Each structure stands twice: as C-alpha cells, then as structure tokens.
Figure (cartoon, helix red, strand yellow):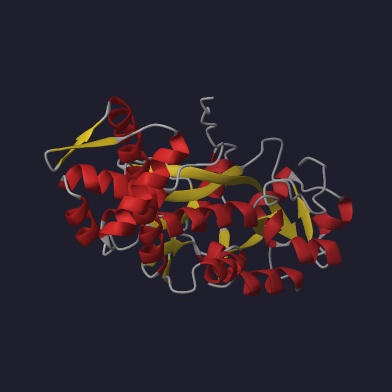
Length: 320
C-alpha cells in the first residue's frame, strides 16, 4: 500500500534553503560545500532532509550536472526571496548598531535646554549609550541659521514663520500669561487693568528673542507699548525678581508650574485674546531621520505631552 507524505507545518529550515540555493547557483555539491565550509556529505544530507520535509524531489543529476525539477524551480523563487529578506534584516540591524555609535547635534532654545532636554537626554543615553549628543543653545532664528549651515541636525524650539527647505514637527502648544508676585495689585484684585499694562516694569529673557517679539506685536495690536523692559539671561533669575515684586513677566504656565502650585507666583491672562506659541522639532526636509534622531524626537514628544495642557493656577479673569 502506498504511503502518503504528510507535509510538516513547521517553517522551512534556513540552513537547508541556503544549501539548496548554493547548490543550484554553483551547479555542484562539491562547490557548494566548499563555499559554505561544510562537507559534501553534509550538503547531501541537507538536501535530502529538505526533500523529505516538503515531500518532493527538487534536483536531478544528469551526466554529473544538477538540474532543477519543476518543484525545485518553484522553491528556488521563494528561497531566494526568503534569504534575501534575512540578509536585509541583518543589514538593517548592523546599521542600527552603527547609528548607536554615531553622534547627533541638537540645537535648542535656552528654555528647552533647561526644562525639556535634561530628562530627554537622560532617557536617550539609556537607549543609546554610545551615541554622542552635542547641544547648541540659541533662539529660534539662530537655530534656523545653524540648520541651514549644517552645524546642527535637529532644532527644538518655536515654530518658524518661514520653513523653506526645513520641516517642522509639532510637540505642543502653550499660552503666554502675565506672571506676578502674590503681592502685586493685579494678583490681589484678580485681574489686570488695561491702562496699567504699559506702565509696568517688565522682565524678559531677551528683547531679541522670538517670544519678546510675539508679545510686543500682541500689545501693539491693542495700541500698547511696553515702555520699561529689563533683560535677564536666566529664567530662574526672572522668576526670583518677579517674586520680589521687581517687575512683571510674560511666561507659559509650564515654566512656573512649581511656583504656581506653591503660591509664590500668580498667573493672569494677557487679555481677551490668547497668545499661543507652537513648539516643535525642526529638521531638514526630505532627509529621513536616523534611528537615534527619531528616538530623540519621540522622547521630546513624550517629555512634553502635558505641557500644552498645563494651566497651573492661571486665573480665568480677563483684563479689564
């Protein structure tokens, strides 16, 4: 009685497939054995086991030549694709390892350097311990210039007005508000008075900053000019000066989250119109991000997921 072959549900053995493809390519069991650093008997055993596994003959020997059977031709087509994909996978994994030894150059605003990047860099170093990261601080226009000059690979900052050859990937949107001491008259009355806005002493990081120009334009649209402006190159110094009642600042809630929770600072709306900023990562358009660069962007997004929702103890009263 004839026995029927029952085909296995197990995947084909990649070593047997490699032996089969090599025999077909070289046309010889001996040459295949030499190329694969195996004995000829090992090659013969692999092919015999493969034929038994799939239940059909793959090769015929005619006048010392190896000729494919129809089943062998069919399998060869699939085997070459399978082995090709396995080689591609190895190549990609090798690239990942090489990327892990590379470096990325990041430009970031001073605010991002202080409040966003520390946690991001800590997590990034855990994932890419051999990747060297350099940070170049600067305001958004400077960062755009550095990108165009190829001095940095990524920039973390405010969305620029003109992207040209660059690409912007958003992280979060925040809202700027007045920040004052709890002893300031505005804090005690729960709102600011329109007539008082131009008369205050204001404390900003820099009058050349993108944020200051946004604030200046915002009030100019209401025919107001901030006459007295002090510049301090430290966000912590700005907050301490405001706490002491030395002036008013305009900041986002996430920058003063702890102070708002402690009650050492109070946040008030700028007016009936909201002034919002878009934060994101800027890179070269049409240049795919490397694996560590994409991981860096993903960590920035994870670190800032709640920044746009953080209103702290911002008052809801509108400017009178």
